[in-house]
Image 1 (spheres, helix red, strand yellow):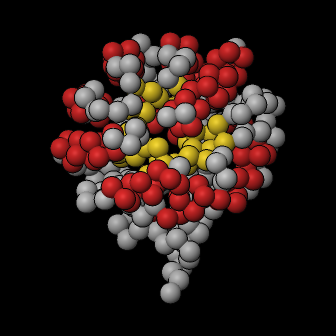
Image 2 (cartoon, protein in one colour):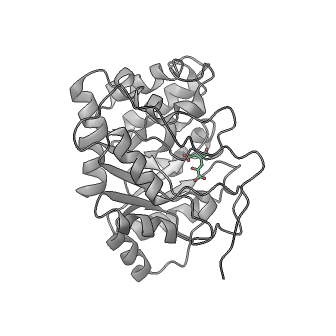
Length: 297
Ligand code: 0GY
């Protein structure tokens, strides 16, 4: 039986015709943060989901990859699919080696299930602490899952709001794997880059050599808005220049839960040369770093 889903009434669908970016990414560039949604009648959304999106499948994602000048994707399991990774695995297998994945797993997952995910291209799992997306659990829950995937050489992606960093510091600084923070830890960009919250985030990056971050999500963080996202640029630039070997970049297509506007993916790509100002920094951000973490691990 197939299930059909009605997107949330205030759901903003992705822009089907983004502009061609002026910036040309280097050969082999990786979009290291994007998702697939369904299609819901093939891969149903999870009963426990906190939002219902419009479909955004692998074919559209791969077309966008080519249009923007990228070669590879890292597809992150979206919370609307819960721990049912079938849509993710389907996209990974269809990508012919040009995509890797970050899954969601729950306690009780078996080693053969993890091995199957690994064979499909999964190299990490994600812990989501954003309350509008998931119900955060005690630290022990995450430690148990981290131990399971450490033996596969996977890493942990964490998504949290800036104030959560202090609360979960003990967990985030003691995970047995690499730790990749989504969207720079969601700083309040009305604060200075050397304000208390972002200083704590920089300290986290500085003191933990296994910590990485995605300099992504300007459309989520900006108050000044598109297409420049000027207020986010200093935060991303600082991270790229301070930690050039532990930063990643992604579109975040199809941009779940955007309310203020739906970004033009071409404009997002044009932010890259403003946060990574040399060819060397751009190659590390878009090619060297994601290849090391996802293809050579
Ligand atoms: C993102 C951000 C969001 C959503 C998810 O998996 C998800 O549902 O990650 C968000 O709503 O902030 O990175 O895609």
